[in-house]
Length: 388
Image (cartoon, rainbow, N blue to C red):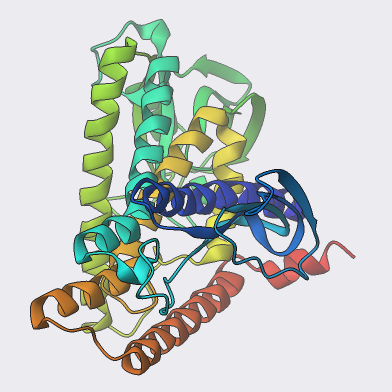
């Protein structure tokens, strides 16, 4: 299970990073800026191919010994399967007098190249969501607006340690049947489930759920006494129906969904930043690489369309994080270009490098913090121990 989760997470993250770097690469080439290497995966290099500057013939490059800095781009396949990278000529300084160097370009061209990765993340999200809407996926509907046979009751959220969570329900599960004292009934809408649970408070019940293509039966005892905002099971429910749209409407709705998701993430990010100054506890919504990997596995269990939607959300999230004006991120690099444009001269390279280094260390520290938080929250050490 853990190995499969890691592989799935690497695949999803790899796609997001590769598309991001491809945005930088394509925009650089379209603006006449040279790129030494465009790689799939991270070094060390396994193999590459490049058109020789002199012979104009394609040649194969084996291994990482050759640090290629020719005129044409080396396309490489690398050993660490985590996305990709691009080495743009002059991006780290130097070559200011060469017209195909990044550092020789106007401020506008440099901003375009730096922002292109973020743009590609949003484009990827738009494409994925549009495909999902065209192919079709379960979507929330208002009660009573759809035919009874087309509606399913889905778990939308859960309270930790409440009966719904302890019985094994997961967000996205569809509840299709409820049984108590050997009497079963079909669950066609939220009201059916609420009435069924209310009649059996304090008694053991079983719920038949579908999770992706898997059907399971779970048991629990609904609470007799519970907070007024939770209910006997402590779950939030929604009615969903399988809905698809014509391709042209799917594209338009996909764009609208990207905008709505972006605004939601920005709001959550603002609330998270504000919480840092108002309370000492770590937000339960904060997740690092380990937490995202766990969520990726859970979403994949629900079905491929759910995984596509989740990948789209991650892509938007990656784009938003990268455009923040923090040194070491694309947004931080854009900030230095804008400062140069305003003051009429570039920030000293030494100062910029120090700021990027500080930003990088800050990001590494934050990643380590949320990773430890993920390990504690998801009991990762215990799960790894169970493998042996």
